[in-house]
Amino acid sequence: MIQAVLLIAALLLVAYFFFNRKKARAKAWVKIGFALLAIAAIWAILRPDDLTVVANWLGVDRGTDLMLYALVVAFFFTTMSTWVRFREQELRYARLARAMAIQNAVEPGDQLR
Image (cartoon, rainbow, N blue to C red; front, side, top):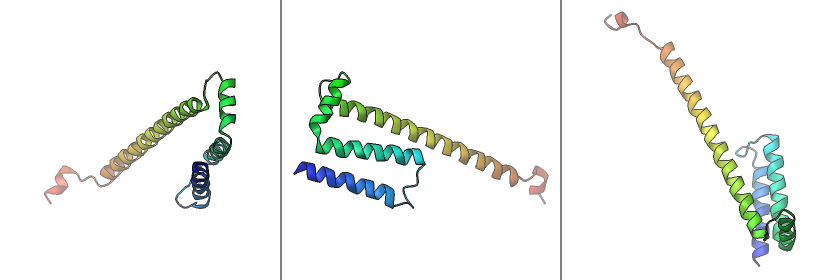
């Protein structure tokens, strides 16, 4: 039962990401990465024992531990990516505000007239 729910949720997320193009604009490498992540998620849902085999190949005891490590790395990547994007946006706004201030500047003598 839980596998069916998880599989439907994963497929709905994939459909939303790829078919809602107005809101989910992304670069090609992001789409490829998301597709690979979706394939891995569906594979892990359908064949959880295979994940333990892969984990053992990588030196991890359980497949759930491997998933946890992968999610921690993904969360770190997402956090850093969001921070960089917001920092760049703040710098753009600061440059725009400076340019507008310079463009609309009034000389001190012009205020009295």
